[in-house]
Image (cartoon, rainbow, N blue to C red; front, side, top):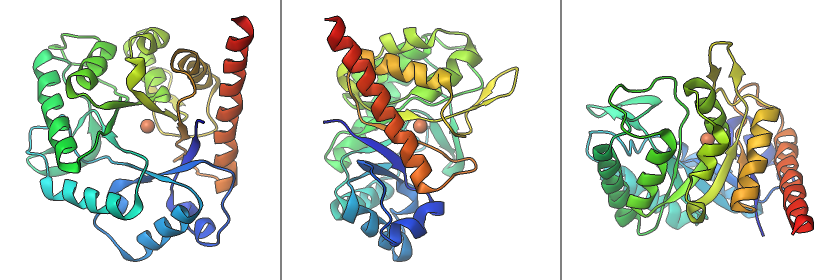
Length: 276
Ligand SMILES: [Fe+2]
């Protein structure tokens, strides 16, 4: 059975606390909002956890950065995981700190073989500390480096293979990156190691004319749905989650979008069965 989920957002805390859970299979919580806090955030998590399983999704491990891995922070994630038993834990394939300063942004990495080894070693360090595999997510970006040695797809595939971790494939990030950097998004998906694709992200973006901007607006646009259907045809029914962060509507509306993903995936798989 696959799963369809929504992100846990502060706009929905009241609905969760009131027990107004929609039909949804899992909820993704931003790790940083809970790893070092207790109080109301944990009360919300407990309310959610009563209804559905959780996954934790981080933004600050800086897996591609130059600062040492923050081992105390990883231990805080382990404590959180012991308490809430998430299905899995993820973070991003990027750098997000410099000289221990948190950028609150996801910086793209130079796509070199040296960086592949560097990131894979750091992912390994995190996995060893947590005692479990993590998922890493492909980010969207607006720059590339003159020293890039590999395509975006080659870099992502090489890192997850070298690190022996799993992949959180953000379909919208592929749409945005493909437009901004001029590659074929379907070719990108075909280059991903299918056995490592453990979760999909779905979101919307802003068309700024010269580039696409990944602002997680909703509803999900046709280009992202189309690539999602390609992902389902390639990887089967992988758990998928809707990220809706701009003008976030009620929990029910976001859940309806997640259930649209469920219906679209079912139609793709049904079509595949009928054709075989
Ligand atoms: Fe994402």
